[in-house]
Length: 516
Image (cartoon, rainbow, N blue to C red; front, side, top):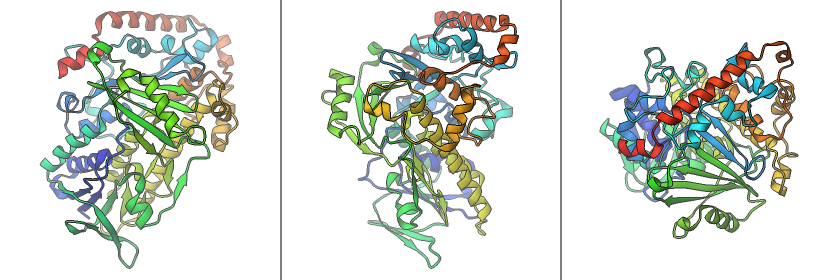
């Protein structure tokens, strides 16, 4: 087996890769990570999918080990504000969709729901979030026994293999720079060589494969496999190997962001355990509550808004607490590399591809890529089948997420500015257009959503369609022939469970204060 790996670039992508490979392969693999001391990480992707817990479990880390060091909090859902109309909000939660008589509860809600809030009628989590509560009791026990951490039969499965077997009720939010620092220590203690230096050149051999990277102070660094974690620059894959980049800008025009890290008294403010996406005139603002600060940023399209106006809007949105906070302006490269593995180079993270962080997919992409590379790790014959399997998996995940994000804009009822009016006439992927026609008659299911693994189950599509309000939806005609009694009992069970948990769970801030 090849065993000498050179990772170029640190940040979340580089150090997640180094730590995972050390946990997977131990001393049988030699890893060198080279990162510049002058190039800062983008570091705005602070929210995750619930699958990220498998990463920490794989490393043998418990929440109490790493969460306090990263100012981490729980994320029970994405909260969408003002996408339908100003003042309206709904949740896309991490919670298994219930079914009654073979139909999802959302179908029964469309037929005769108890209220106009599908999320609170069909799920428990939205009410828990509104109350600012933790999904764990102060003794550490989780709210639901079916969500079993570390069950023997679940160990060793990849994210795609886990999907459908369980739905864990939360993900994490954390300071990306602190996570990279924590994983740096974890990796170096287990033998990863850490070089802080600038890469001046990437050398290619006669075949066009990478033979080494030249650094300013440490000379040439060589390996068998090179992993490009250089962010939007794509220093190895896109620049040195000239792998083309496929843009998604035709369907996802947001290409810029301005971010603030705002210190706040979180005990006084309270922690809403979710990531919030608040629609604006030319994009949307994220709000991520952490221990000690709030991460926030305006994602927008430069064709509709200037950087100066975006920063002004963001500061006004945050209020006086943002007055002395420096802003980080980011130019986003939206799309993916044609292939993320070429010759002896694999790109992971932003160098591979990126979509706007509307559903917290950035770290999910990293985790998925690491798992797939570990699964398809090459040997000395560099079997092209392994490379092709990897590239297909990465492309499917990114193309599927692209479709899902486009759905947010197509389905949003809001149309009060040119930006929002254009979301209704802009080109969308052909396959999504076909699926939308089906969903107008029948809500999404496993047979009508994007067919390849991309981290998003059918109920996620239901939540976006029902919450955004811009597409007329109908319940299955078969419900007219079914007894609604069982569905009404399910709605009542959700209300009762919500009432019970609201009276027994601690505030999210109190739980994390105890952990700290």
